[in-house]
Amino acid sequence: MATATGVYHTSYEADLALRKTRAEWIRLGLIVLLVVSAPFLLNPFWLTVANQIGIAIIGAVGLNILVGHTGLISLGHGAFLGVGAYTSAILVTRLEAPTLVAIGVAVAVTTVIGTFFGLPSLRLKGLYLAMATLAAQFILLFAFRNWDFITGGTDAIVVASPEIFGFTLRTDFHWYWVIFGVAALVVFAARNLFRTGLGRAFHAVRDQDIAAAVMGIHVGRQKLLAFAISSGLVGLAGAMTAHYRTIVTWERFTLDVSVLYLAMIIVGGLGSVAGAVYGATFMTVLPAAIQQLARNVRDTIPMLGREIPAIQLIVFGLVIVLFLLFEPRGLDRTWQRVKDYFRLWPFRY
Image 1 (cartoon, rainbow, N blue to C red):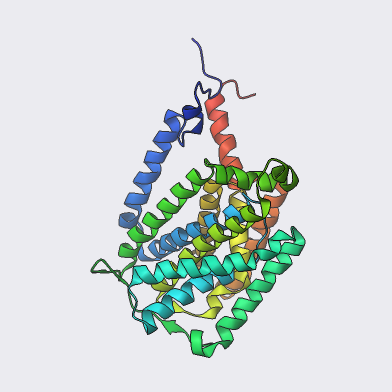
Image 2: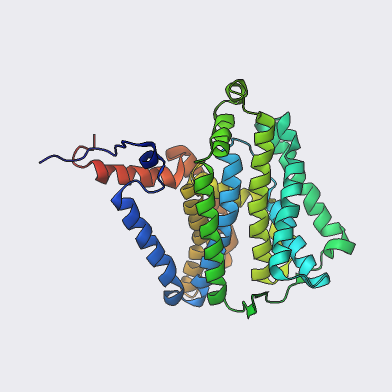
């Protein structure tokens, strides 16, 4: 009896398909079933965490397009989240714009600002580009805190529960469907982006920009497009954060947030849309799990409850170091190894 030892394609259509095997379709069905059933099974705490995961997936996919797929480093995406959040909140609270219009404008504004701060990528790369985007983080954070006439300064902006098509989103259960619906569309669009010429141009710039230029790819244009698409998705995540949290304050968009999103794509896997999903899920669930564990044992070990922030920071740094040492390609590569093992068994060598 013959046993398949790999996945083989006899046409370009089969090779370009998003799902290449029956097992992949089965896994997709299980994921859809899990996502649909989750809000009915989770308690309020974990339902809130699930919504945070959905928003983080949108931002992480956007950042991974820039860092993982195009090879450009950014330390300013925490501030770009803030641009999307503040823009949408200001339009809704001061100009009484409809929520969907405000979110659309927020995405456009963040795209423009992100592209502007991406201009140094035309001349800089690596550590130098990281420093330039770090400057963007501090410049925008300064604007959030000090432009009282626009952002309200250090005072928070309170946003009412949004109304979409006559339906008001008041509970985490309602928000869950909106957030994961948008996240699914973003993941689907990102997967398809890298089946196009534009996505392949991003990969060419990442792998060797000089060779890409020789092949006729306009490297500078591709870099700015990567910044634009990445910033737009991060702005979308920021705008949704504003309406979901209903409170916008500069403290939610500090450098720590930029580092957190970088950690998501490092842990999940650079250059992988699925890796961004894995990383966003893992790095959102981890601190929530630590917090829940501390609450459960605070009567037995009071010191653990008092040191939650320190413990979260230690675990956060330890996770990044361990992944960089033992699995630099992230959770996506680990999952690929598991799938390859079972697909090729018993000829796993």
